Image 1 (cartoon, one colour):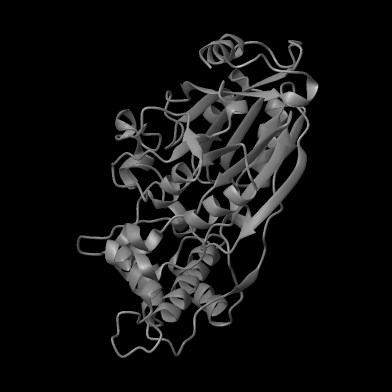
Image 2 (image 1 turned 90 degrees about the vertical axis):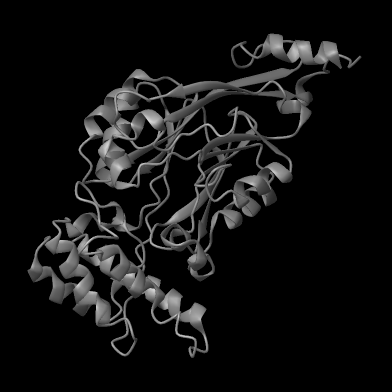
Length: 392
C-alpha cells in the first residue's frame, strides 16, 4: 500500500488524461462566494479577479442577477467553454394575514428601517447601513417579532406553524421592498402586496445564485430544489471527466442566529437536508458555501464527515467567511465582526480519490467579498481504462 500511495502523490500534478495504462483525471477546482448582490459596489473587482484566475472547474455562489451572470460569462468565455446556472423560481404566494398577532409590526418594521437610514431594498443583506438589533431603534427585534408571529404565546396550539407563517410574512416584506423605492411612500404598497399574499417567496428574483464554469462538458446535470426560506436553494449535481460533483450553497438557521433558543422555529429545509441529499446521490465531491462548519452550525458538516467524506481543506476550522483580516470590511462589520469556517471542498472516502488535495485560498485581497475562495486538485483513477499497479 505504501508504493500505491506514493504513486498517487507522484501523479497528482500530472495533466488530465495522462496515459499510464489506466485513466488518471486531475481537475483544478475552485469555489468562491462572490457576494454579488446587486447593491454591493464590488462587482468590478470580482470580475477582474475572475479574469485573472484559471481553473478546470470553478463554482461561484451569489451571482444573483442575470446581468451579473452575463458579465461573468462574457469576461471568462475565453477560459470556460461550458457553464450551468439554475432557472429562477418566481413563486408569488407569501404574505401576511391581517388577523395574525404580528400584523401591527409590519409598518413599524419598515418605518424603523427607514428612520435609521437603512435602504429598504437591501434588507436581504442590508448595505451600507445595517439593520440594528439594539439601541433606541432595534429594528431587527421587530423583524424577529414578525417572524415569530405569536409562537412564544404559551396558549398557541401550534407555535411552529405560526412562526413559519410569520417568516413567510417577513420574506414577503423583504422581497417586496427590494423592488420599491426606499422611502416612507413604500410602506402602504408593501403592506398591500403582503396582505393579498402576492409576495415573492424568494429574494433576488428567485435566483439561487450558483454559477458553474468548466473547461469540460457537464454531464447528467440535476438541479435539486429545496423548500428553503427567503433564498432559493439547490444542490446541483454534474459529472465532469467521470467525477460526480455536488455544487451547493446550503440553507442555514437564521432564527438560531438571532437567538439560539429560536432554533426549532426555523422554516424550511436546512443544511442537513442538503447533506443527506448529496450523500444519497453518491457525490464524489461536495463543495461550496455550506453555511456549516466546525465553528458555525456544525451538525450538517459533521454529518458529511461521519458518513464517509473528508474535507480537503485543512486544518479545520479554516475561516473563509470574514476571516480575521476581513473584520474591518464593511459587510463583515455589518455581519457582526466574527469569522466562520463555512466554505468547504469534501471528497468521498474512496481509494480512487486518494490523490485529491487542498491547494490553498484565493481572492483574499483586495477586499471584494465577505468570503475568500478555496482551491483543490481533484484526482481520480479510472479503472475501466486499464489495470492499476498492484498494492503491496
